[in-house]
Length: 219
Image (cartoon, rainbow, N blue to C red; front, side, top):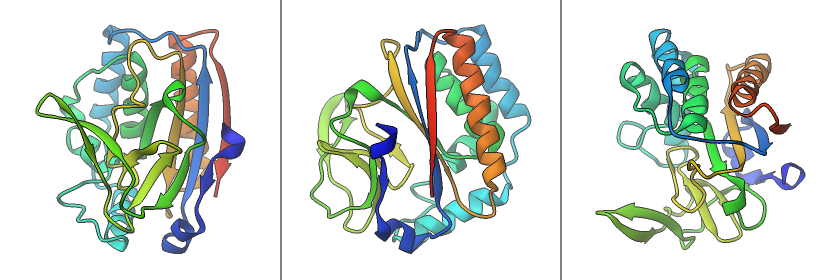
């Protein structure tokens, strides 16, 4: 999977400074949130830097493809605004949300077994399916033309770069294999990006000592 992940040239034209650390974790043992994963969230929240310049860089990136970041916020912006009151989801999701807040970095996590084909970051045509739940019922939405989306062969997995993840590939307590996408823009350094990846890997190994982790930087 890692070798086949692609960032389309149209995305690099929009933001030449974009880089993503893609990480696969195979052999996870996930479970309901516990005291440890909840404490990760609380500790990250206590040190949250809501004015980190990386957040503004992401707002600018959203404006560049026509999104309004005050209405559909970049994931790191939304998390930092709620940093003192982040709800636990499950252990793996808590782990990557804590890293996102602590490092002021958009981090997405997906169930690798839900993918059909490789992950790729593209500008949307507008007819790609995006599976969500609305009013308790499954609904298929579509991205805007030109919107930056993560997708696979079956459709969109995350809209507006890192704003909203779909249902099909979300991480649940039964997830065994996952892919994580840690995304940076300047002025965020690659050293800091690597440090965030190492922190996430350490937390995943705490949860699942036998997990097999690989990563790759795409820039």
